[in-house]
Length: 310
Image (cartoon, rainbow, N blue to C red; front, side):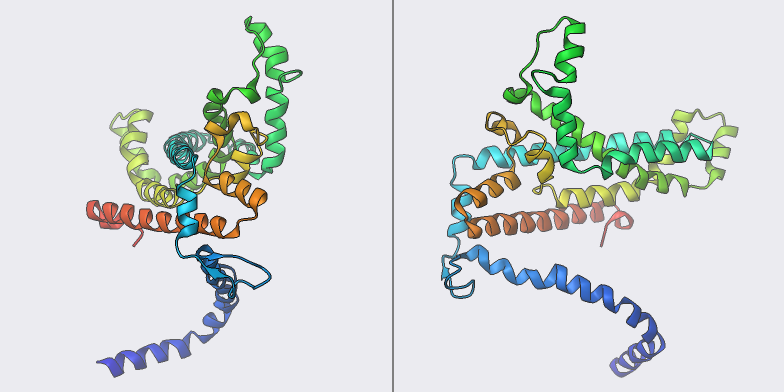
């Protein structure tokens, strides 16, 4: 049995050798960019001294991890990271599906492509540019909101970059504006793949558009929804650095509500040059994300094997 299986595999390799050669560059790229850098994990357990080199630096064990979690801000950055990403997953999924459903109802091909391009455009804009757009809106002296909108509403000017309480809403709006267009295209591709026969049968039975969406569209795009949510859960401890660092302009007055693990580690690296602590934070985020993906996937697999990633 083993010999026949081995011989069958060798025969397959000989038969498809050209395809294997074609994927070889991709495998090499993946190895160099994704797996080879994993040797750098050792930095998380060392007190890096470049005079001695990475391998010659003193071994400190888990001290870098202890420093990360014994800081006064550990609870704040962990809370912010989880709450923001949790809100982004929920709101982003709901809005992306809603926009995808609306785009699917646009029957004119040119208009549909135009809407898709307009919605996707924010995703392609650099976060640095987005930060300046937000500044143009919220600048205290001559921003559009303070200069035009609030006076029209009879409200006094607001010091947006000094009021930390308003930034969870501002950052959520900026994130959704920038990312919903990309995610909705993924859902739209799934919706377009649904056979029109389902909708025609539902129309003959007198089902409304809302009933068709609820009973046909949502159940059939459920696999796509689960996969995207699973991937998002895996990155729930990783944040969009540009969103939380560039958009608030690194304002110290806002750090209670805008500081996340990534920005905190970056400031620590730039201020103290502590590569060990930064590497420990990155390793911690990766391990937690990996465990979360496995746990969530196991839960999904227990409910429905066909929806699980593996």
